[in-house]
Length: 330
Image (tube, helix red, strand yellow):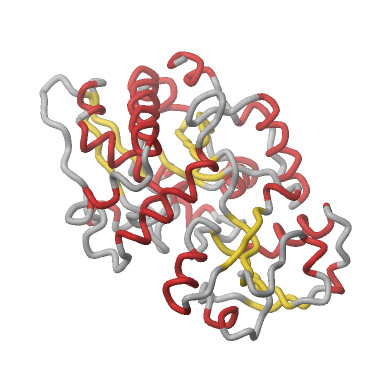
């Protein structure tokens, strides 16, 4: 299931989306009177997308860094930027398009201090028996697109010289059944997960390509804080990034190792198999790891993201990004 949200966030949505967070399942906090409290709002419900944080919590690395971390699961009714604006969390994992739009359109005082995914997992998925490997291959084909991703797909097609009129675009409801049945040729979804779903439901293999690799160069699960939190909790934020990087590095060292360990904790009751989480964990590994370290944001990657967002009408600026905390952790 894709985790994109509509790119129009009104002020009411930003402020109201914190409702219900207090009732969300909160994982145990580290003990210790000297630990500084810090809360993290995830962008989706518990799955392997957040496994690095689970590892760091499980190993006690946040406590070791002097933090008492409260982890808040996300879900379809949670807007992470809204949780930040409402003061429901200190740190949120977001998509850069909605975060930048909140800054530009709503005057939100946010800063992006890191990026979990160096490449957005959103891509074009097709069956291996009828593979679509490039945007040009979409000409004459039927592509199912979630309404929230329409502008991103338009940008990807234009960047690759594909006439949109030659692609039959139909709505996508996050169900691969039409693809399995041959009713469509491809769909837009997270390549880290839906190929597993297709295989488990039909026994058929899927192939995919990322929108990122064909010009729409935005990241995902950007690490966002308010300007006030950046000023008042800078030390804690540096400690959070350092411990989280450690957790992610450990998790990705062997993507099959940790999901089974969390079957009765973080992954309990999600309705997803541990094999699914292992697949997801392995598929996301090359999208997260970076030469500059996990969460890295190079000048080039920021420039690429700004350019890509501009193509869908989102006016990002370099001052919306702050790389100074990453510099402190080395």
